Length: 122
Image 1 (cartoon, rainbow, N blue to C red):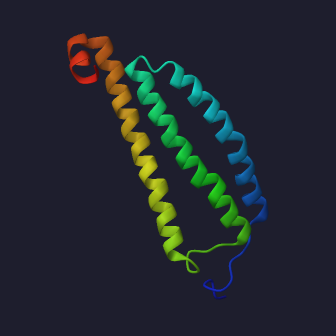
Image 2 (image 1 turned 45 degrees about the horizontal axis):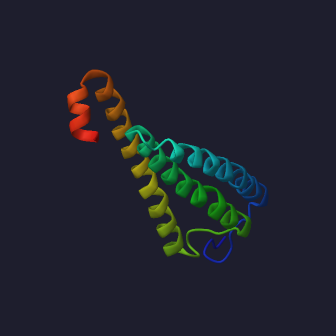
């Protein structure tokens, strides 16, 4: 079997992925809008950035990959596309993890040391 010319379409998994994306992204956008209204505190600014990062990951992970699954796309056919898509998702995954760590530091310093909290986050 030559994978560079023939890929196995996955229509059911692709449609599930698209449906999941079309349901979750609007819900997350709605939550992000609510978080934006509470941006007076630093933790909500961080949560807003985290939400934007997650939405960008969801768009690539569900919507774009769902289309590729339906078409039967394989790495051998378009390696640059797959590399760029993986780099895009990985960037936003690392960004989300970093924002979560900063958010955890924000909350811990707010509880333990208000002077350190104010020096770093105000």
